[in-house]
Length: 265
Image (cartoon, rainbow, N blue to C red; front, side, top):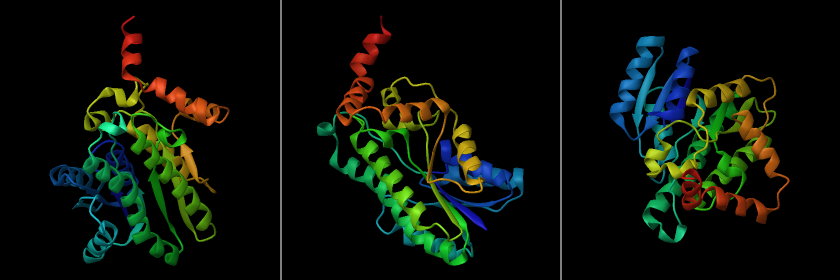
């Protein structure tokens, strides 16, 4: 029994790996940075006595789902849980974006979760158990100017996952999405600006994972869960806004010039 976790080298992915290992569950750690994966795998083996496998992989590559399924089979590993966590964002007006970078963003944030779920879900259904956890975002709940691709990608992940939740009812497989808000990870560093989280109060990766695992442990978990009371209240309040009002509000919130001017007062 092995849980495969993407984006496991840092942040929420690393916290998932640590939490599962602490439960005595073997893990397969997937990310691009082999050195970080090897160090984490060694640490988890030493601290928790589990089998921890470092599996370096570029999730933007076409066919990565099948490649990872084959890699697990070659290692003799039976994947009983999948955490699609890997993702990254870009910040700024879409018109200024680099097309190649945006294409990779879509490949990692949208393509990889679909490919990996397609690769591993059939065996979970056939076995009558296991789980798929897809990491969405609060950005999934409203269009996000200056992060248009990221917000749309996470909206896809949320919709995709909730649909699969309905499709897999009665199979014994648990499928749901967890949506973090601003979280203290390398997210802003990868994006290249703290404006990506608009000065929001940060939660810890461990908080997000605790929310996800508490949901996983429920007798009948729903199709999605939001991390953090403030985020849940924000999502609920957003339902009372028109689409026009919601996107204009997000435009104001994500405007660096407005935020920095307000902070300087």
